[in-house]
Length: 409
Image (tube, rainbow, N blue to C red; front, side, top):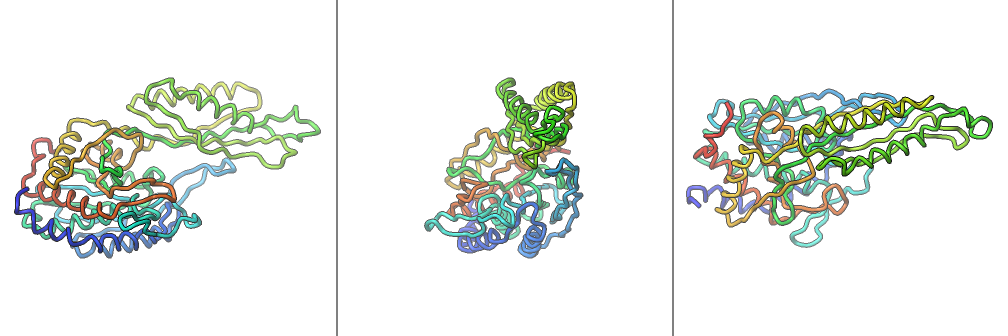
């Protein structure tokens, strides 16, 4: 590795204790996606932490999202705000760094504390997904700003409050931020051994509301139309679509409906997720669902309504993305790290950025495991390790611009 990078990387090497302490502090702030006060507290904490970098910060209000509640009613759910920080927008190289402030753990979830399982294993809500990643992002930028090449690279940080529920509200912010950038860096956790996510599946969250007809369960049940039974049948048929098209998976996740046991239920709701491998899979899945709804509606007394959307399109290992990955791998080798990538069935804001044409690597955060559970962990030695990786990547982009041949206009 070129010795010119050593002073900044050596500085980063001394930040391990601070990075771990900051992760503990941030993970102790409950910022479940729907806990607006907690997400806003997280945003304020992050704004203060990033302020010394000298960028221009903007709090961006987001529109509410639409959901179907347990009563089958369409409701609007407010979202917290996004935070954008911009520095040197006129520099020749432009990088977008993205991370989310929210976690899957709501304000009433029992998993709230950060503990050390051993000297190198931190357990806590969001320590890997994605509070630790935000710490790495911050320190990589701090290292860049100390370098003699900082003036050649402009950056924008976007911190969104709704990634864990699909980034529906913040997607317009990501779309706008992608304009004029050449590289996207996202700080989702890597796998425990440091492997990165390569190609990613697309995803959409949906619900089907089934309406039947209420009746007394004892006096005249034959006049009722049992929506719970219809939803159960529909759920089985949705699940049976698995395996009919390669790469498409459908996961029914929740059923709502019914009430008093002496009433034939007139309402049932099934909520489900669809994963896709290519863009054409979306049309296929929607066509299958439409056929199921048509068949349901042909039964006297029943009707069904589909709600939801595909929020993330597939992210293939396209040539511009592959070239960026090769640069990350090369930076890793200079640091003594053998980094690889493999396809993932998961998705994240990297899917969104690629939809808008921005090549990106989206697992530059900590090495961690067991995310979305109370067993979530982050490995403390990965804070400096991954901080150095991002810092070296940013400095190379600023000093050498090795991706110039594939930069977007």
